Image (cartoon, rainbow, N blue to C red):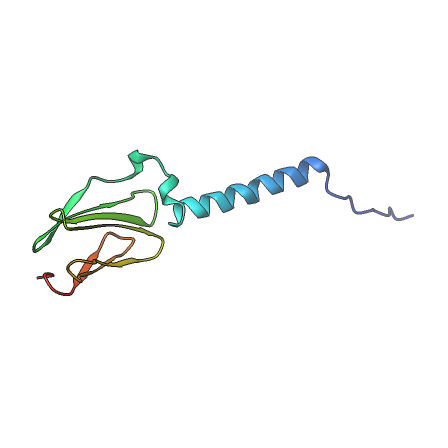
Length: 117
């Protein structure tokens, strides 16, 4: 006589393990794809490097663990900006000088407008 096998339902432990793996995957994606780069440790950020922009003091750093970059710029005491490109490009237009800055997550900074060089 053939043996009839009844499919087993997953146990509570198996369901908890699967849920934990899925949550860890989502958290990892959030942190390392860019959107959550601000939550990563300071050690994961590279050094601030100066970008040459006439009349501006602009510094950019790139995250070594994630697809993210940050920029900090100053035009004397008149105008300043901070850009955080976490997974997608970040853009700002300065108020005083009308210069348009775009920062890509790889640290590439593009500048358009007056006093942009």
